[in-house]
Image (cartoon, rainbow, N blue to C red; front, top):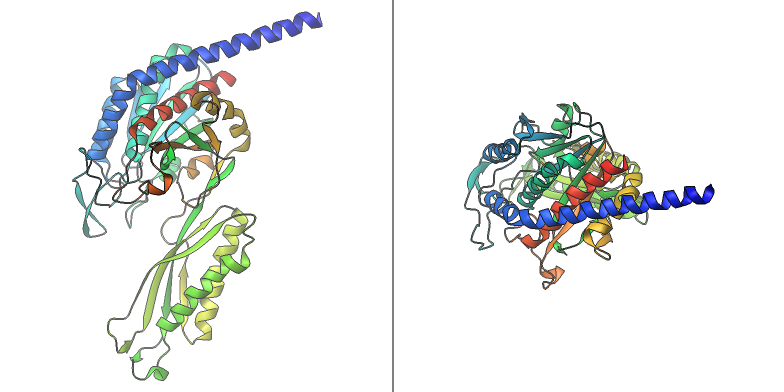
Length: 433
C-alpha cells in the first residue's frame, strides 16, 4: 500500500511538473509573440512622458488597451491610476501585479529616435520630462503580461489585478499621490489581494537576468528639513551675530557622525545626506537664518527610528551650543517604508525565477539604498519586488547610464524576461494555492 501511495505521489508530482513546464513553455511562446508590441508600447510611453499625478494621457492609453482585452477597468484611482481585474470565473487567490507610470523632470540626452521632447512645469520651473528610471518599460511589461494572462484565462483560477500606479517618484509639492494613496483608496480590496509582485528594470544589470533578495531589498526614505535661526549682523562684526551659517556647517558635519559612529553598519547600511542649503544674500551680511534639506535612507526599522532621534538631537544641541536654534521637520513631505520581500513568499517563488530566467540567471543581490513606494503595498499584503536586467551584455556595468540621468537608456530585449516573470509568478502562485 505504501509503495502504491509513493508511486501515485511521484506520478502526481511528475504530472504537476509537466503541466507547469507546459504552461511556462506557452508563456515563453506568447512572450515572444507579444515582444514587438511591448517594445512599441514602451517607445510610445518614452516619447510621451508625464510627470507625477499628471499621467492623464498615459492613463487613457493604458485604460483603452485593458478595455480592449475585455477586462473590468477602473480609472481615476489615486488621481490618474488605472486598475483592471481579470476574473477567471473560478474560486482561487487574487494576485496583484504593479507597474509605475510617471516620468521625471529630466531633459533627455540619449539621441534615441524616440527621444522625449516633452516640456512641462515642475515646482514653478520649465523642465524637460523623461522616463529616466524605466517606468515606460514597467508599463509595457505589465501590458504584455496582461495580454498573456488574459489569453490563458481558461487555465487560471481566482483573479488577477493589474495596477498601474501614478506618482511613484513623489507627488508635486502640496499634493498626495502614489502607492500610499492607492492603498488608502482600497486598491488591495474588492477583491482582496493575497499577494503582489512588482519589477524594476536595471540599466547596469545584464539582460536575461533577475535579481532578488529576501527581506529588505530597498531602503526606507525620509526627507527632512532643518531651519537654523540666529541673529543677523554685519559680516565685519561677527561677534555681534549668532551665526546660523557656521552653526549649520557644524550641524551638517555632526549629522555625518550619526551613521559613522552610532549605527552598527555591519548589520545594516544607512545614509544621512544633505542635498540642498540656502542662506544669506550678500558677502558682508551674516543672515538671520539658514535652511537645509536632505534625505535619510535605512534598511532596518530600529536603525530608522534611531537616526530620526539622532537628527533631532544633533541639530538642536549643536545649534544651542552656538547660541542659535534649530527647527527639524522629519519627515518633510513624504516617507516610504522599507521595500520588504516576504521571506516565506521569496522561498516559495524562487523556483519560478530560476525556471523562467534559466539556471544561473536568477541572482541573489544585496540591498540598495534607493527607495520604492511599492513598500506601501507590502505593508498590507506579502509581496516581492525584483530587478530585471536592462543592460546589453557587451557593455560594462561601469559604462551603463545611471537611473535619473539625461543619458539613461536600456536594452529593450530585457523586457521579454520581465513579461514572462510577471506571467509565471502569477500562474505558479495560483497553482500552488
